[in-house]
Length: 518
Image 1: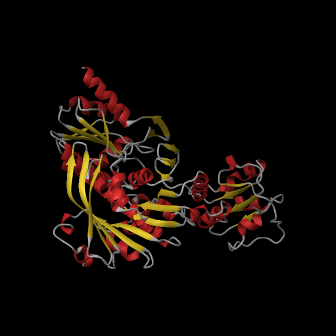
Image 2: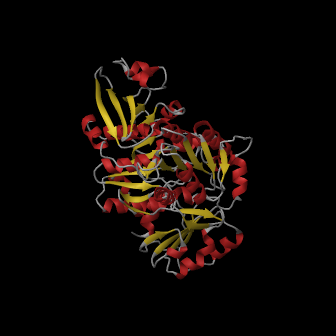
Image 3: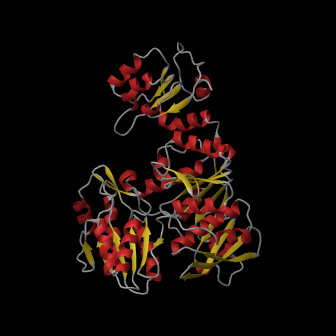
């Protein structure tokens, strides 16, 4: 591809003196990764502008530079001095990056069925489950990108716009037909998925999160809704039990097929017309309804009945679903996945049979240890809603007291800290407050925020996370249940910008082994 072909039809004014008929070997946002013939793309970052590293990129062989003109005078002066390669100012470069990257990688999403999954909780579980039940399905998300059982690391839930297109192209090259992609509110707001063609959009649920960035729930929800503006969206999957479901449904394009799922038992009991039950709750016609009833929480997982009423039909298909997972929230996750499978053309019987074989996701209500000690779960829950759901689930499985070990991350929404403590107090019999990832905040300040206006005798503070986990497992009775929340799959603890190896599950297993030995 030439630079001229890359920029064609993107409304980017170019100095007539530049020769654009030059070959391009790649695109790079990081000057340290520039190779000969690459186009260096200098974005205006929150702290630094990419032009700070212009000389490094040129020395590495950049054949052209695209930069955001929102730079300081010194940076712009430095850019104006470059004559050996085209250096082109692009207004709103970050917003256009997706289109530029898609052009370079030949629009890989148009050759794939990309399913975008957004929401506060459940994105990772849904993407991982979909990758297990759909053939030739790739993954992009919190745990990495690639395929089930073989993921490559990603820095963010939703990578930057250039990386997204590069990953999609690689998954296509590997023979993938479908991609289950977690789409964060940051990713949507910052245009990281611009020019990605989503065949389907899934909304798991929406509750308080990332208000340090979005500031208000309204802005947070609006960011989530941006996924519905994707070109050629064929279907949307919405959780009817979520408080924001009506707002989401109102935003679904009329030419996209609307699928909805619910775990409300009343909708499936003694009814041959689910549509009429829902009609007074939703602002437009739901094309397909998936409803769970008769939910049972068993020692080996969850069992429920799923009912599917198709549009323009009075007949309701029913199947029994058994999955080796725990918690009501996993009923929602499984329903979301099942609904996507149906939207992609699978039969109800075939889809439910595949669900029976799914494997739990690392760090998502992950049971560690065995029946010789207390029941121990490790979960990523780091929002009030997620913690509330995890603890309510654990309460159902606990035959004794319920323990929770949790903290809150530093440099994030401080308003959620007392809310998480309130959830812990509500459900748990014993609460150990500890450090999570303090990052650049003082850990004691975070603890003080968590404990604000609380004097509960059930709370104990043990700042050292390893000691807190050991204390819970050593002290708990045989039939108690322990939830270690907040970090889930993470293999580190971040303090003052330094990531030290740390795994909740590893520490828990070691503590259980020590308990058993004693």
